[in-house]
Length: 383
Ligand SMILES: [Zn+2]
Image (cartoon, rainbow, N blue to C red; front, side, top):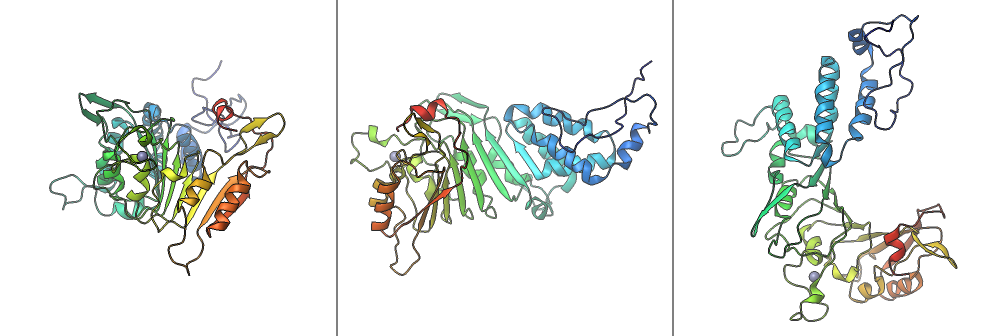
């Protein structure tokens, strides 16, 4: 007869099967089996940590808050040791999408650190939390919004996140699809009110999860100090060319796409992961390094797989002053292209334009495999 409780007799591997939350249990009837409580007591903290980091990392989508909450609750019931490690893992990889995530973190953080007795008007975590969170990664997803006429709001109050998580090592923001209603002008204001409170964070990634033409305006009077490295994915396209009153090539004073880099006055390195017309970006003089990701995702029978610079229009941007030195004695500014094994399409002209204007252009062959499978959208783009 099978026993009702199966005890893990061994952990087959440190890496868990896909989708698994716990090590697989294996029943051996003739084997001595300690009580479950003894197993949890004797397992090394390092192993518990590795298991929980692995499990936590498999559920970082904004729609998976229930799984995260469930894992946290169940693991915390095993023993005090497991509960402590679980808390540490959750506070070092912070995932906030929904308001439920934020409420969950508020409870844990106030339990661990308490309230700052000096915070009279707004609740804030105790100052002792600042040092702890300096090694934490913060993942925010903008999602779950509501609209009423011209009023737009997210269910989660992102601007209050720094009240509870006052510092971080790295921040990544994913943006789920937002409304395309023209009367909604600045939905990103809460995000930038949040980011502007993290003056100790130098590494930031903004990741739009969909390709679109921008309809929003730059958040007024926002400045995010401290960010020196900014990585952008699916950056929204500027649509200023549709406004007939504008001089060709100019942008509205509140154009979000054009002016976004100006919100980061300390920016030194801008990294664009998906193609963008570079002359439609306002770059401040402090930027010294621009990295462009150009994987070999295009395909022609005559060429095989290849990468392309055509969608960036490097030549036009450099001619307009992109990455040009402002001081004749200063070091040359650099554009790095992360490409495949071959030179990308448009390389020769881009190199000539850069050399003529004192801009360093470097190709790094980071995509080693010639067999990258092209995506449908990539093969439809300009080749
Ligand atoms: Zn524009």
